Image (tube, rainbow, N blue to C red; front, side):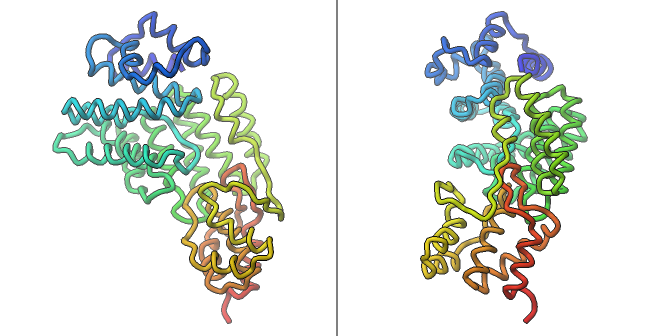
Length: 375
């Protein structure tokens, strides 16, 4: 991580790490208990460790520290300080600088739903404003802003166009680090429908190759996790296990504590235990109501549901709805589920890598038998 920070500061900003920063970065990444992170609420206290030359240089350097904090596991501090940096940059009335600050936080993502929608909305709004400014942005700044929009809009909107353009710009620039970020953002938008596991496997493969060129273990982990998830959906469990093992080894070697969260697979066979399903609650509740004997309430809840979120659990959620619709003999949802799941025929509803709802073909057969086919 320190090597990545040094490269980025030197190559992109023309700044060198001071001895004090080297010590500080090491202590942060080791999660030194002596550091009082509550004091890090002051952006200047972090940025000044990088440069005392100007506020501008401090802001540009801040993304390196914040990215380090994020991949080391301190997501809350990184998120808070990122918004503070964006706000501070906006106050300098320099659209080009604002664009670099907004798009410079090139931390890859693996889970396709943001855990802070308000913060993501604020970042997307800032990125869109920077793109709409009259300033003639460089292709590099434009690519970072587009990738940021695609990354932060995960699970909340269709930003495939922005993701695709970001990848194309990064390739044309020959910037492997930027291409890693753009590919990760592209993955976040690869859920327009069910059945796209092969497409995501290809994104993961490209990301792994590009990460070697960028000398980025963070992006290599990201690519291997993406490929692991896709291989689970493609029923290639042996290859998925190899990727999971590689991720675990990289996580230990490079101190990435969050990576192992995604390499522990849970298989839910026929039993769905009631509990906290978070944002997926509306799509799971009808089946739980049915299992509890509340058929009328289950049917009422099922009839008015919107389509599930377009994310890693898309196929699994549709399979839950298919099961519920077939047991209730609810024709509208039977038809909707069959149409939605048809593109995923031949796959498993296991694209998250942590939940496996079984063979999609089994659910398609169940839906057909329940009346999804011609009368």
